[in-house]
Image 1: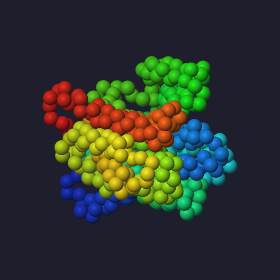
Image 2 (image 1 turned 180 degrees about the vertical axis):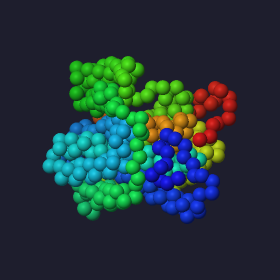
Image 3 (image 1 turned 90 degrees about the vertical axis):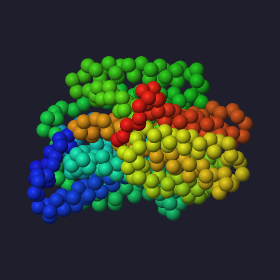
Image 4 (image 1 turned 45 degrees about the horizontal axis):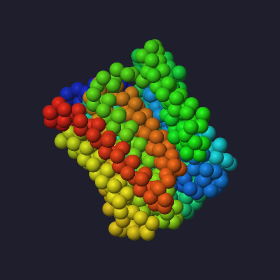
Length: 484
């Protein structure tokens, strides 16, 4: 069976008995290249969810704007990314995964250049939103290309590698961003994407084979896609602007009410639309439902803590951008080292045990920050241990969530299931940044360090809740943990 004749990702493909060894070897090499390209594409776009965090203060000073305004540089990307992921999967199925992947990478590079050259915060926010549109094209198409190359018995390994790269990207973003900001300019956080994307496009044109779903037709409901973004956007607006405008301000109240009303409208629209933006039937699978709830909770804690710690080191301990990133780099190193191993561990002992261990480890790390960090810089004794613990918690959680989200779904739904899980992760990023900005703006606890201690407690609770969501159903049933 040649590569061009392989079944799409939704169908099982197998090599006939007696296939020549060199053909099998060629197929294996091709699959390895496709996995490398797909994972690298996912790495680049997920990198931009966190690489900007370290330069938050620097960009704020550069444009002389407020933290609340600048939060939309982060949230515009995450909101649009989350809203477009599922429609992008349908686009890839209909018009071809290779074409969609290449267009996504090329457009991402173009919008990255616009971000890097932005003359104002408004232009930067707009460019970030457009950048996210193309980033959304990359994620489902890259995963579908990878799944197309792997036999059904090896797909869980490919998903694990792909998910580990995405988790590692989110973790190492601040360190890479700090190096670029310190030795070049914050603008290179975006401009560095251009040459990397050029290499990916050149290799993709040569090495990738086109695949599409012959049954795909039409595009997902545009109103549904708009509502997916509207709910967290309204909620984020009210959370971020509430401290400065006042919680009783009519616009703030309207934002909360709008979010509350938009959610049931979205559910109604999804149930009635001919081509719904999200297949709600997927949520009948308990593992898929639980994993996505846990992903939302943990991502809220992860992205919120990531920004909070970098801001704390720069504003309270007065570290430089680079020193702040290096001070927090031990955690990302742990994530990078263990990410792939934890996905294998989950297949042996069950994802629930691994995720619960990750949640507990994360919560202990956050509580360590809250209880032991004070205004005096003591990195080795007061910061490093908790950075290592939270890094271990991230490594036990994010890669495993990516694989567990689709493990119980039919192969034909792997791509859409992964897109939904990635959407929940990005929505968590929006809420995490918004909660941090709001808590920092509303705290009235005296010294600034006390404000951050309060924030660390909140993110400890959210991370622990993610583990409890996974543990409770299994404890109630009294059965052994399922494997993925």
